[in-house]
Length: 305
Image 1 (tube, rainbow, N blue to C red):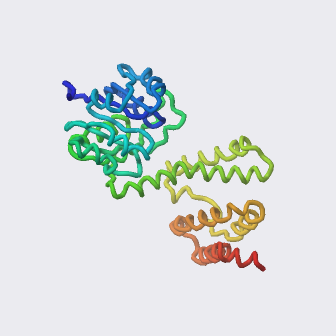
Image 2: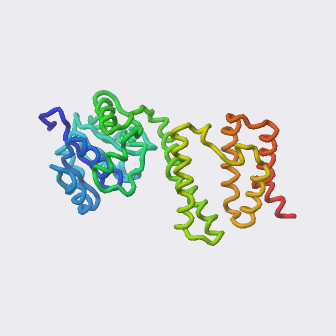
Image 3: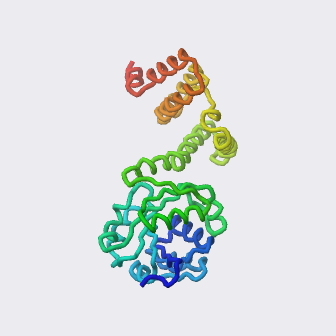
C-alpha cells in the first residue's frame, strides 16, 4: 500500500558503495529512507544504523512490501534478476543506478505495473563513510535520468535537491554516456598508474611518484575547470614539438614498450586540441608522420631488421 503522505517511502536493495552513498545523501536531505537490504545482512545493518528511521530487512520482497520507491543498487550484472525476483505492484516506482543501461533491465518490474527509471550520478563514491561527506561529494554533479511522468519529476527534483544537475539521457545513448564516465574517472586513475610505472622505472616508489604527480594532475583539472580544455592543454603535442615526442617514444620503447601504444594514442588524441590551439600545419603533419612511424605495424617491421 502506498504511503499516506506525499513523501515516498524509499528503500535500497544493495548496500555497496553506490547504494550506501546515495542512501546517506538522500537521508541527509530529509528524504524518507525507510529500509535497506543486501546480500549480506550485516552490510544492510551497518548502513541502516547510519540512517534515522531506517531498518535492515532480510529480503528484497520484504523491502518492496514496505516501500513506495525502490532503488536497486546491486552490481549491474544482477539488477535484472533482482527485479525479476520481486512481486511488484502497480504504483511501485523502481529505479536502478547503472550508468550503461536503460530502463530495459527493469522490464520485469514494468511488466507488473511498476514505473521504471534510471538515475545515475556522474560521480565516484569511493572512500565515503558518512552522509555529510557524501552530500558534499554530490554537489555540482550531473545526474543522468531516464524515466517518464511523476517518477521523472521526482528524480529530477531529487538530483537538484542533492545539489546536482539532472540531464536526460535516452536509453539508447546510455552506453556512450557511461563510457565517458569511465574515461574521465577509472581510466584517469589508470593513466596515472602508468605514469607511476615510469617513475618506478627510474627507481622511485609509488608514494614518491604520486607525491610528484598529484600536484600536477590537480593543477591540470583546476585549470580545465577555470579555463576550459583548449586553454589548459599543454605539452609537446600542442606545441608541435615532434622532436620531444620522438625522444619520449624512443625512451618508452626501450624501457617500457608496453606503454608505447598508449602514448601514441594519447598523442593522437591531443591533435584536435592542438589544431584548435592553432598549431602550425607543417608541425601537425610532422607529428602525424612520427605517429605513423611508431605505429604497431611499422614498429614490427623495424624490429625485424
